[in-house]
Length: 533
Image (cartoon, rainbow, N blue to C red; front, side, top):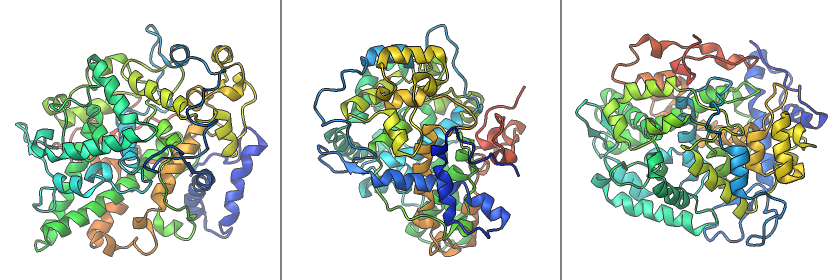
């Protein structure tokens, strides 16, 4: 089993991670040591971030926190050394018309990107809660949860289409959800970010790019309003609705006397457990990690740091929602009204997502498809006086970059940033994220922040606790086995009509989690892109 040298960092200051392992018993056997050594690093980082959390002084709802306080009082003039946003976007973010899309070096695809985005949406619902609850699937309040249920056999509501496939029902069939969504939008609008309203408003002005997220004819009754933002998220949500209903059928076949409520509750616990298992064991292991992640609650129990529940900080919203580069033509085919998924069918849609390699989150790689969201996030960062990129690195215990070339590793990009920012300490968090150099011996700041948050939200979840990680929690050995053995392969194949009969769907590479020394080429089942030609 191969692992990278955890301590091959670019500077002595970044070796602070080694202190984490003082808390781990040196007598652990080799297998358990391999399993445990990646996870505490992210937990320690999450603990560092949470220690600095503070609430925005003007947040009327008290739900939005920060990792670092504002760089200066809100509503005061911004740092005069910062470049104009339009100039910054044109020089650093926008992909030039004649430039090719910079492809993801790990050859990850649109399906991978969509699974990650779908998972994190639950943290940015009505209450910005950091607990994994599956609220993007089941709803974040009781009214939504009830309206999404069929109250028959524990299942979620669906409607059958001519191709005999089931999808979430149209918005008009569950009109009461409009009131719930309006209340959620109002909550976001009252806070300092107002991020969803602003993306939606920009979408209406850019309908040709497929961002008309409020068009009622395209909307479906789902647990989070942003799931109608594009067809990829709609397809992913449909797969999870099908998985919930599939689990209900399996449970009902084994225990026909169970009531609707018992079937619903049992299936919900199982599905939430599956989400976490797939995210930490499959998805995060191809998400640019230097450290292997293979979470087994039985192995890790007693070695999980206690980091209390908290509201998702604004910096996480900015970085988690930052879109990867997408090819321009994709906006005309994948991003648009959800009727294209219904016409194409789920098998073809998933295959299409698998075959399309996602772009890198790099400078000059943002196209028209993702421009609206990128610009809104840039504006939010400025308006909320988010501190500089170097300040976040320093707070996380990472070495602050001393020059623009030190940050980027690219002379041309460094010259552009120097012209715009004058001093490397002025570089903003999103600009730093997309221009930071990529090397084998440096932990990307983006990875440290995001994965620390996600890993902590999973390993501290009550379902994974010592008292609940047992068959009884999942209504028996059958449900417990589903959670323990969940994988992206089984999740996808169990919910497509052809059940992955095509060999392309079965082209798996199970060893990907153990190798980090070169770009991987994965098959369908592990969220990778098509095989090497």
